[in-house]
Amino acid sequence: MIFETPLEVANTCKRKEAVAEFNRFAKDTLAWSNAENSHSVSGYEFYLELFDRPLFAKQAYMAIKQLKDKWVTDTQAQSKCATNESGWYFIKGSCKDKLAHGLGVAVTIDNEKFIGEFLHGWRLKGKYSKEGVIFYDGEYAEGIQHGYGVCRYQEKMEECRLYQGERIDTLFKQRENMQSEFQRLAGKMDQLRGAVAASNRPSSNGSNNRFSYIADLASDDDTTRTAAQVQAALDIFRVMIESAN
Image (cartoon, rainbow, N blue to C red; front, side):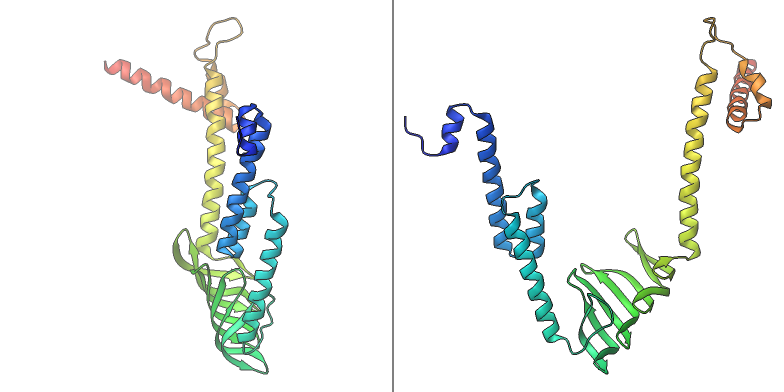
């Protein structure tokens, strides 16, 4: 019998480790071929994320660096003037003293874009987007979102106010407080369920002391007292139903 490939030999000889290694090599080389065909930063980054130990990791990192260096060179070549913000490249608009000043457009290598007003190289007011999606439209202070604007929240835009990049508007704070309160109440409910369940467990002598919770109605512990009140309310409700019948 003549074998055409090492994989066929490994399969015939039932060498599972070798078969697994050949399969990994096949998947890796196919993914690398796809990355090379895309010849994009995202394509090479996707390849690196696919495997714990990519066979062509060194080539992928080198390709990413070359693409990014080329992007910066090409972008700087079309830029009329500079900005004071690291990573931001001014590609369109008016300048003053070789700095972005007035209306214009700036971009980053991470596919971010700002369209709006600049002041001596700093973003002052306008729209910020990433991957084509607008996330903020408002005021800035030395390139940081600061002041009044409109912010994206769960696929929708809403009025907002920021201080040094952090939201401080009433709506956002109320939402944060509500989420915190909900989590606190959820924790209390879990404690209450546990307390009620414990109160219904059989006593050590094997019997279930039906009204043992009565003593807890005056407890100083909020959870214990509330659990007793709930149990008492359930008993009263049960008695009312039985009386009605």
